[in-house]
Length: 463
Image (cartoon, rainbow, N blue to C red; front, side, top):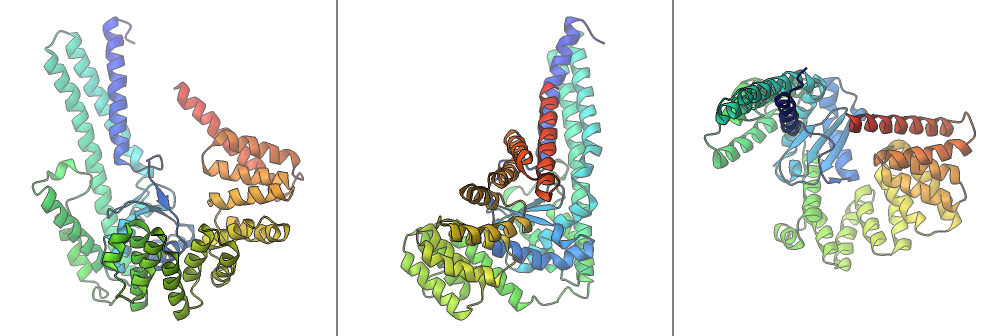
């Protein structure tokens, strides 16, 4: 143990540089702590589950267990962050050309999931951290012994550079492994791998434009040209390489892409891409959002009505019309549209939540009673739906069911990671709910989980 002033200085330098290294290492690993803005859309989430079901089955993953988290970012990117959640940017639709490319991207992320790559990150984080610490200690010792400052700094940065390269090499191996897994999943699912190669071609073109002489040893992914070289022959040998894309699936892809354009881009950009002379389904879909942003609600309703006239049972057409009406204060007109949307998509929690929201906006006992059942079903189908829990807490309070309101509030605060409030409301619910009932046990569970998270947070702060 070092007790000299120089030793203490070395330890302090080591701690600061270790923190710097950990920031570097964690930046390579996507986490939920990143400041990202996410979107929820019933149609997109349903479509993603539909197109990926064969891949998940081929990978041995329960399709219903996978959660897609849509990130509001127009770049072509997706990542796996642990558990059964796959994060994808809106750019996975906006910057691709067909549905096979979307499937290829997500098959790659499924490869990360099945290999447990995030969970195995500690395998390299520990030795990389130790390597950096060794560089810090050697550098500090050289400085303390009277060596020129430049020599000591060189040893310190040398250790950090070696650690960084070790981590990056580990990541490149993982990425190559996920590529191979994706190719196998696509083959087993009897799907073409052409979309995956096309995505890598996009990346290769971008690399050539931005960094044509990129050092392959300082990046976290293999160069796109290498990825293509290692995959193309295998994918082309598949009997499914030239399998045509299902026209109905491709049409839905184009619909969702247009929907995103209308939702994300300024109206002028949307209308430039989908002018009024274009009467296709995607174009009319996109213009609904553009006109709504422009507050030209009559034109937005006309486009929605034209789509509904073509397919009266499509729940998503009903959903968007009902949502626009609701957001603009036309509650009574919105409710029939959302009731039909819920009728045609009875297992879609986001549509059920929107319908429940419209009923709750009436603020009358009969509508609250109907909304309660609908929102309870929505929360049961999607326990991570924080807005459904918020609406339930509001309605339970209006109906004088305070223990249930407290339990719903606890669920919502737990999702928000506000563990103090989650523990508080769960305790209030547990004290008043009938002992031994499922809801009482749920309140106990939330209280215990929140308490454990508080304790863990305290331990981390003390460390």
